[in-house]
Image (cartoon, rainbow, N blue to C red; front, top):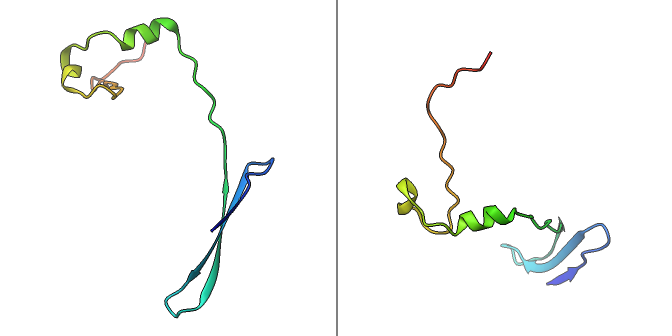
Length: 79
Protein backbone atom coordinates (compact mmCIF):
# COMPACT_ATOMS: atom_id res chain seq x y z
CA UNK A 1 0.00 0.00 0.00
CA UNK A 2 1.31 3.43 -0.96
CA UNK A 3 -0.09 6.72 0.40
CA UNK A 4 0.49 9.93 -1.58
CA UNK A 5 -0.41 13.32 -0.13
CA UNK A 6 -2.37 15.17 0.97
CA UNK A 7 -1.28 17.91 -1.44
CA UNK A 8 -2.02 21.66 -1.22
CA UNK A 9 -5.63 21.04 -2.35
CA UNK A 10 -6.19 18.38 0.32
CA UNK A 11 -6.22 15.46 -2.14
CA UNK A 12 -4.85 12.15 -0.83
CA UNK A 13 -4.32 9.03 -2.95
CA UNK A 14 -4.02 5.47 -1.63
CA UNK A 15 -2.67 2.90 -4.09
CA UNK A 16 -3.12 -0.82 -3.28
CA UNK A 17 -2.06 -3.90 -5.23
CA UNK A 18 -4.27 -6.95 -4.63
CA UNK A 19 -5.16 -10.24 -6.25
CA UNK A 20 -8.76 -10.60 -7.44
CA UNK A 21 -10.89 -13.79 -7.44
CA UNK A 22 -9.34 -15.03 -10.70
CA UNK A 23 -5.83 -14.64 -9.29
CA UNK A 24 -4.97 -11.60 -11.40
CA UNK A 25 -3.02 -8.75 -9.82
CA UNK A 26 -5.10 -5.55 -9.79
CA UNK A 27 -4.21 -1.99 -8.82
CA UNK A 28 -6.78 -0.12 -6.73
CA UNK A 29 -6.43 3.67 -6.46
CA UNK A 30 -8.61 5.52 -3.95
CA UNK A 31 -8.71 9.33 -4.05
CA UNK A 32 -10.06 11.25 -1.04
CA UNK A 33 -10.24 14.88 0.01
CA UNK A 34 -8.88 15.67 3.47
CA UNK A 35 -10.21 18.70 5.35
CA UNK A 36 -9.38 20.18 8.72
CA UNK A 37 -12.28 20.82 11.03
CA UNK A 38 -12.52 24.24 12.60
CA UNK A 39 -12.37 24.37 16.36
CA UNK A 40 -15.66 25.32 17.94
CA UNK A 41 -15.58 28.15 20.42
CA UNK A 42 -18.04 27.96 23.29
CA UNK A 43 -19.23 30.53 25.73
CA UNK A 44 -17.71 30.19 29.22
CA UNK A 45 -21.17 30.05 30.76
CA UNK A 46 -22.17 27.18 28.43
CA UNK A 47 -19.10 25.23 29.55
CA UNK A 48 -20.11 25.78 33.19
CA UNK A 49 -23.66 24.52 32.50
CA UNK A 50 -22.29 21.27 31.05
CA UNK A 51 -20.87 20.45 34.48
CA UNK A 52 -24.14 20.99 36.32
CA UNK A 53 -25.85 17.97 37.87
CA UNK A 54 -28.49 16.49 35.59
CA UNK A 55 -32.16 16.44 36.60
CA UNK A 56 -35.49 15.17 35.28
CA UNK A 57 -35.44 12.76 32.32
CA UNK A 58 -31.74 13.39 31.59
CA UNK A 59 -30.63 11.60 34.77
CA UNK A 60 -31.08 8.26 32.98
CA UNK A 61 -29.04 9.35 29.93
CA UNK A 62 -25.32 8.63 29.64
CA UNK A 63 -22.86 11.39 30.47
CA UNK A 64 -21.59 12.03 26.92
CA UNK A 65 -24.96 12.47 25.21
CA UNK A 66 -26.17 15.92 24.31
CA UNK A 67 -29.90 15.40 24.78
CA UNK A 68 -32.22 17.82 23.04
CA UNK A 69 -35.89 17.46 23.78
CA UNK A 70 -38.28 18.08 20.91
CA UNK A 71 -41.69 19.42 21.79
CA UNK A 72 -44.64 17.54 20.29
CA UNK A 73 -47.14 20.23 21.27
CA UNK A 74 -48.95 22.13 18.53
CA UNK A 75 -47.59 25.66 18.40
CA UNK A 76 -49.64 28.53 17.07
CA UNK A 77 -47.78 31.29 15.23
CA UNK A 78 -47.89 34.76 16.75
CA UNK A 79 -49.72 37.27 14.59
